[in-house]
Image (tube, rainbow, N blue to C red):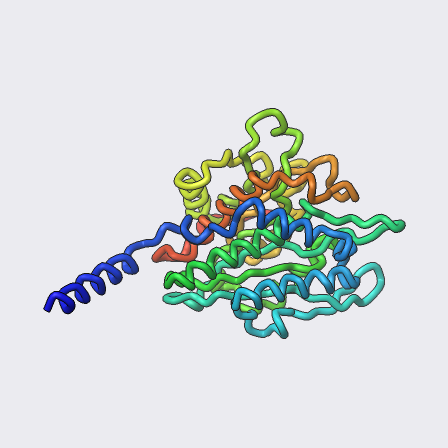
Length: 332
């Protein structure tokens, strides 16, 4: 009798634990400085030859990314071949064969609604025998997406599959004119009208001159309130309750003088009426130079920025209703 009662208590206790809302922080142990440093030193190494679209270094990069997903047992996206969304792009008068890399964790309750987390996988390549390794631009974003995927997969392994599907989208050809994201939105693997939001990560590993020797725990957010008031509110509250970074909206304007809003892959999602946030650390002296190297990444700050994006994605994926589009953008 005692054994039976003990069994009932154990079952009830376990069911109670798994019925509660989990703390997403419990799934982020792999988002740590050591792992980020190890991965960026690899991805921003000479072996990848600057990852120029269509060249051997970019082919090595897409293999590296796909093998990471395979090692975590995260599924390839539908319509891909070994995680590759293949395409032919017209670049500088030539037809270039290249590919996006796309993985997915399917949702438990709303599998036909999609949260897309993106970054571009390419960089400037090799010029005059000098390799442009692009540690900040955009090894930081690429590794960020991989570690966010790992955190979501950790949640799945603990029995907490996200309610909505999460698509991990690594885009080619960004440095050639946002070509991989245009190809994806022209040839979506998942319906655009079922895509809830795009969280795009492009350069999140450094501190720009405006924040040096000042308040350095910051991140620029671009686009948060341009299509959805709700997205902005969720982003703000998530940060307040988790990482408490300084959210800087300096570039959050389509008419901003440096046109940052137009310069990363979220733009093609917004053009298709999909709310988006572009996460960015700002420009610095090593932007698009061979001096953008792994030793200059601020790994502690990078960790916190990646965690913020994961927590935001977690909230967007698990809330009862998808966020609403309640604004229009006039590009005229």
